[in-house]
Length: 295
Image (cartoon, rainbow, N blue to C red; front, side, top):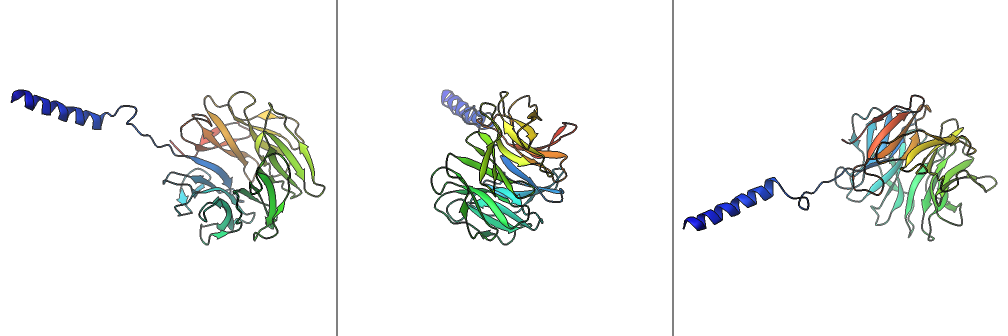
């Protein structure tokens, strides 16, 4: 009888230990992924996407990282937000219609409307400086290509024809698009359809963004090992490293409206690792970085 009682007590103790001290296979950690930050035109807010509530949604916070507010509420994934030049609208991509398309909503998250409806994935939309056109990337014909359409979604025109072309951004004068082709940054002159290559792999460059005066371009590159944020002149000269991460990667930079800061995403475990993604901002002159989201 005593042996039976001892066995029962041992089983109970093992069960309690399993609950209180699970082994590594039982321990499940959920990491929050914040990404694709974008400044408001007046520089007071930053929008970004996050899966902190279970699926990809669009959030807005103050430029100091405080007062985080969720703007979208949908079970489908929403991502890659971009503010309109006048601050009244936000572009984003969403699969709420069954496939990733470009959507637009008011700055407070109300009145979401679908702009594209293609059999492929339409992603990473960016407003032209005058707010009349939108550039985006789509794999509707196979490899991702760059497209431009009117702000209401009409007159969608393909701008690139070969290779893979990613993440277009307008120059401040509205005459050029910067994007990366394969693993290098290129500039497309819209009036002459001429394409100029600014980086050369393995000195690669991806995810370009223009400074407000159009004189420089920020981008990410893993030319020195881990991925860091760099800047260069708009003609590709003077390529300069801006971030120095002890571990992990720094990706997806976006310039502030006053040109003094760059918001970017830190991935402490590395782009290919399993870990959190955090929004950071760095002062360009002081090279001082601070964390806005995440632990």
